[in-house]
Image 1 (cartoon, rainbow, N blue to C red):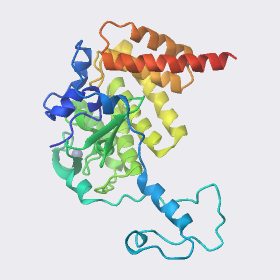
Image 2 (image 1 turned 135 degrees about the horizontal axis):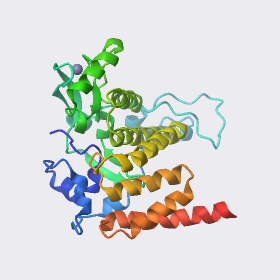
Image 3 (image 1 turned 90 degrees about the vertical axis):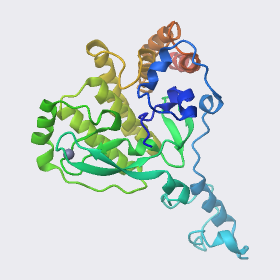
Image 4 (image 1 turned 60 degrees about the vertical axis):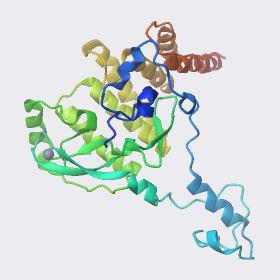
Length: 328
Ligand SMILES: [Zn+2]
């Protein structure tokens, strides 16, 4: 089964638990007063994104002087450190994290067929199963999964004509929009096949294609904002703060403009969630007063879910500290 929640299962833990993804607009459950959250623990306190693969070899390398330690694990330790290596406090540059697909990962990815609404041809794309495990949700609502991440697979690109969109919106396109894509995207499009185990760079390229398509087809501002938000998450994972903030800014501008022109929900996000996201964006962008205004108003909303309210209250505390610091 395909993951249909567009990376936002986090908002509806009950749905994730039941793994019955037949209702696409999960976010709307946010506005229902008291959906008893099932086992909220893992969601409230997201475990820090682990990177065990990277850490292990470093320690090993440093602590192996001469006597070769017993058999098994050593074989997989990359290369021994150069003899003259100083016992530095700064860890040596670790080899780039190459995703070794485990059988468990491979079992969660499959090729699915899609019908392109622009060129009307069929194509296949790698897709994650819904059984991927949600590990937690960040303050900015970025979900973390294991062992494979549906976020990396969410932007679909038709290899034939270059039409691209996030999966939830892929088939929603008007005739006029399809013509615009064929006129402005298809002629210069060159297809690059994706690896089965997606990496962030490949995902960013697909999301940017979806963003370009959204602009060319004169798509909705909230769709543009949603794509930009997800690109900012990808850059955050990469540790690329500059690009993360650039896309946070685009998402902020798009959602803000969408509020006055388009009707909610925005790509499944209800009003409270959009306000929370906007408060987060403005905090990241240093617009602390704006962020405080948004979060204060959100906390007093009668329709806010207990879970979002809890996040909002935590955020208000952080924000207050930041504002006090800035005023000194
Ligand atoms: Zn196509």
